[in-house]
Amino acid sequence: MIAEALNPAIPAPDAPVAVVTEGNTDADVRARFRQAMEPKPEGNVQDISTAKNPVTGEAIVPKEKITEKKVEGKTDGKTEIPDEFFGDTTKEPDELDKIIGDVKSGKITNKNFKHLAELYDKRLEAKEKELTDVRSKLPKDDYVPEKTAKQLEALQKRRDELEELVNRKYVEESPEFKEKFTTEREAVVKGLNRLGKDLGVPEDVIHQLVNSSPKRQIEILDGLDLSSNASSRINALLEQHEQINAKQADYLSDWKARKGELEEHQRAAEDKEKVRIKGLYDKAFEDVLSDVTKSNPLFQEKAGNDNWNNQTKELIEEARKYFNAENSTPHKDAEMFLAGVAARRAVAMFEKAKDLYASTKKELDELKAAGPGGGHGSETSKEDPTKHMSPDERAKYTFNQAQATARNGY
Image 1 (spheres, helix red, strand yellow):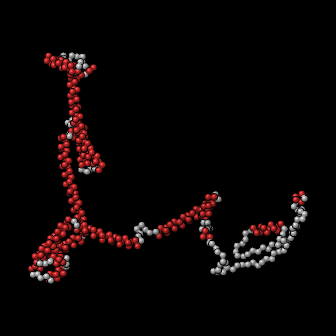
Image 2 (image 1 turned 180 degrees about the vertical axis):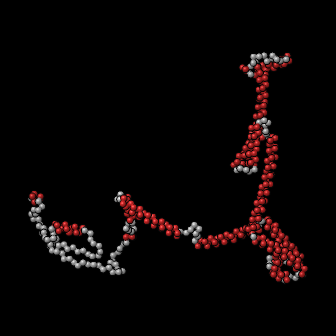
Image 3 (image 1 turned 180 degrees about the horizontal axis):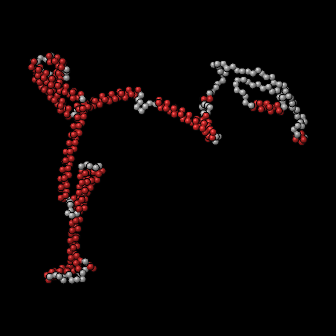
């Protein structure tokens, strides 16, 4: 049994004996295996094996090769999903991309570098041409679509109309226009109303005459029971009214020029007013400065003290600038006003300190004069202070010394 197990060539008892037939040997099986692993040819031709039956050893009868005929417009009933549906659009790699891939992987040789440069130049030339074509199709900087251009044209036209209405109204509301036309026209209308009242013509009829055309005016006057003189006087006022309207229409026909004239007049009037106001401010500043230099010692000059006098002038000029709104800001104005108010208290404190200093200095000087040795302490001269005094001066000095000693409790 052990020998049988170790030697597979010896069949075990009672084991089925394999029947070896032609075409079923180990070599035949390996040959068929290699044939099955080889790639099959493409196409619709079905390959039929010619191997023998492994059990009976009989040759397999080959069937006729079947070639499927492709019918145009007909499918085999199977549902196909295109590769593009999954994004699989694999195409043959570009030659330049292939060479670049070889360069990266280290497979390129020196002889291919020249070819690589040629391919790169062609790729670059193609890309530049593509870029030029795309740029030629792009709209220019001033390109405006037709629909947008029409909308802009309509808006521009509307803007011009509104601008004319606004500026005409600006001209009509100006004092110059009212002085030229409105006041004069109103005077004529009042004259017509007074005349109509005297002639018995209702006010509404006068209103119709004023706002009607010349032809209609004649028709209205012919319908009134008026004398020729009365009609003539009314006609004279109506003609005057019409002349005013004609002058007004002519004046407004070039409203842009009229607007420019009005703006120029307005600027001139504003400049004139600014000069007038500045003159008032300058006079007010000089008036106050005159009073301050007399009453406030901080603004008074000191003879021989150039530093003090120059600082005083600088302070005055700085105040003048801010007073005339030069380099002024709301915060700076607030600072200046607060400093001005605080200066009143500072001046009062200064006057009190000056008086106190004067009285203290006077008293100190008297003490020094009355003290021993003139109040110089350890520096007192050993020389007799009465050496060069007269008898009267020496007596007075002695008296003062005694008085000072008694006062100080010595």
